[in-house]
Image (tube, rainbow, N blue to C red):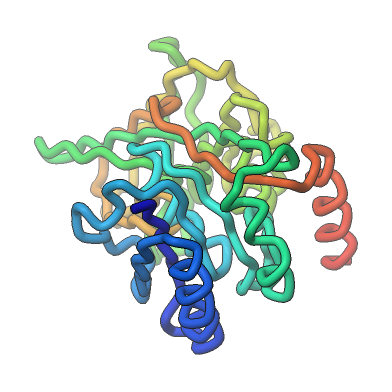
Length: 280
């Protein structure tokens, strides 16, 4: 029997109600359905839950989709996102579209294409300990609660690039270029671009600018925080306190996120234009 998982944000009652409505529809079509209530962003789902899944339907905002993306990447499970959040850069359908449009993705008719997105892998090394993270949007290292800049040394492909004095540094994918990177004035990249973007957060010097990197670049960041602690974050969901001298290595992951789409690739320009106008 074919398996489909539904991820929904249980803190929002309407997503739980939508999941309950979709389940019988899928079962009538012969699918085994596994519903997952993601109440804590970044919390790991028990192993085996996605085993055998051919599709994940995500009911929620971009944050819920980021969580789903990390879980689905290793098995290459495609995602269809349904917008129940505020922004919706990553979603494909509106809730009202579900009764009419979902069947196209289930049957994978000729109108459906796979939108493949680059992901990042990051290794955090500090105090003799090492931890590895996966991210679809971005990796961030930043100052802690004290309102003072930190020093970040930057190496690209083992070449020392610069030292920046700033609130922190973002390394984002093209997908993540519309997230924190956009908020601090970084450039927008079409989601099919595989390059990374290196962007300082509120740099002390105006000469510290964003840098678009080669897709296979390896970036190392070392933070000097002095007596305060700093923060490491993957996708804004997997967060760690970091100490003075912590080193973070970021590069393109072997894994990718796969979205099922019917909207054309040029829809990106439409949604960017609409979102930027909404913010004016």
